[in-house]
Length: 271
Image (tube, rainbow, N blue to C red; front, side, top):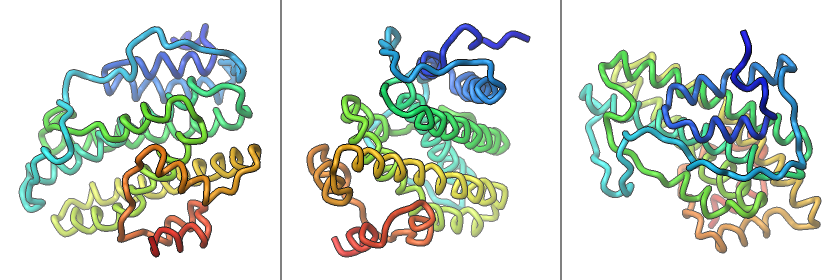
């Protein structure tokens, strides 16, 4: 069987996946792309300049994207409430697929390992989306049945011209919030009796620690390459790009596993 990516280079293929609008098709395509890479069926050109000639990111007609403050709050002790939470998590994972793909195609002249790392992230986010989408369907719903917001991609748009800002403010800031939120969400699902969903969150937290660690590694690498002090640079970027203020509670154990320094953790808890 000839892969659909057989004639494409890795970063071009990532852009093609990013432009795909059907969520399940996108997730499956990313998993195929990762397989093709690991099987040596696809090349990587780190210096190639790629132009996005298609609307990105591709997304389905539903869910409708609205402001976060307009999203309905549903009680967790109802089937609709649990489904809405699973849907929100699936939407985060769908966005996370897009974010990883965007890093791969958009930023050139990085070491080969940079692209390999973000392909791993995209592949695992696609796996997470599949788990959550299957559970959502088990509950009698489909992805798109609830409204959602677009905050993650809005930050991607803000940082599209700076790899340093992108890595600082998406994986190690906005996505790292998932590490903080996971224990409370898991507890709510377990309390509601949805142990299948709680176990999915265990898988996601395990993998997301690795994803944030990748973000931390490349942020520190970029700072070192440019002779920048990492914490001061991070604070400056948060101000410049109006990043959302991070508020407790913080999952300090998970953040330590993901490579945040004690100095950074102290800044979080004291600011």
